[in-house]
Image (cartoon, rainbow, N blue to C red; front, side):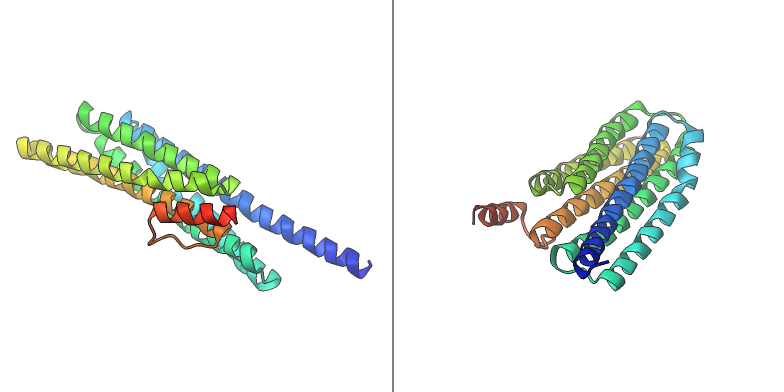
Length: 241
């Protein structure tokens, strides 16, 4: 094989390796998204069987995280990626960590749902949690789509929506505290619902992180301590130059 052909072969193989990593992250994301969806169904429909399944299947997500992490480490050691490719690999490593933590939160919801399925339902609780859960699940789905497309504009929009999730969580907590004060017998049940809402709020935080990694990969900017308005202006200036 000629030197030029060898170089092209290595280059194509390298591109294939990077694409394989991206695909595996999205596959992991799909599994995590299903876990969150099942956890919400189990919680809001008092499905103890599904709740138990969610609470005991987190090992699948954990094993995927380990496998992808090993592949990233091998690629860095063998290929020594630079610039945007290195940022992509680092973003993948961070993204799978957030996905694994989302899986942990789904597992927590599943465990609480098992307990809540055995007690009398309080419709108001579950309507509020269901609404918040649907917004969080949509945010997670959109963040994974943003990762697949490396769309910085959409990433900023999705990350901003985390504020609304936080506000909804705060409102639900206030409602639950009021209910516990009015009816002390409901404290244990209300606390479990509150913990589920807390897990949903954290899932929103992790989805926001994924959007931040997209911006870091594409633009090379770490925006963790930067306002979204400033980031958007900087990206617009970069695109216009």
